[in-house]
Picture 1: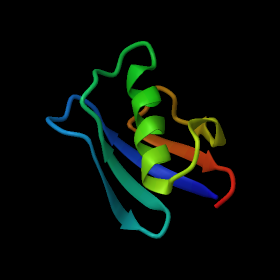
Picture 2 (picture 1 turned 30 degrees about the vertical axis):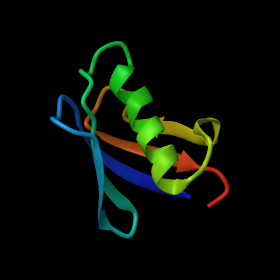
Picture 3 (picture 1 turned 90 degrees about the horizontal axis):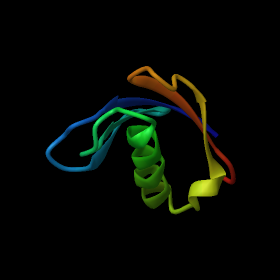
Picture 4 (picture 1 turned 180 degrees about the vertical axis):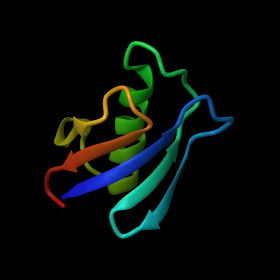
Length: 74
């Protein structure tokens, strides 16, 4: 399953909100440098979808706020 994610780094708290069927907004508390925010987004998504982090792959948008993730097994 592929989902679009709008990332909001440097947030006060971590949360995930479903905007549409395949679009999510993820807020993370870390700064967007050296891939830290991407790793945290994967962590948040793995908890939300109850899958291991290794099953979530960033497909597109490594340095963008809008990203495309692929989640295996959903």
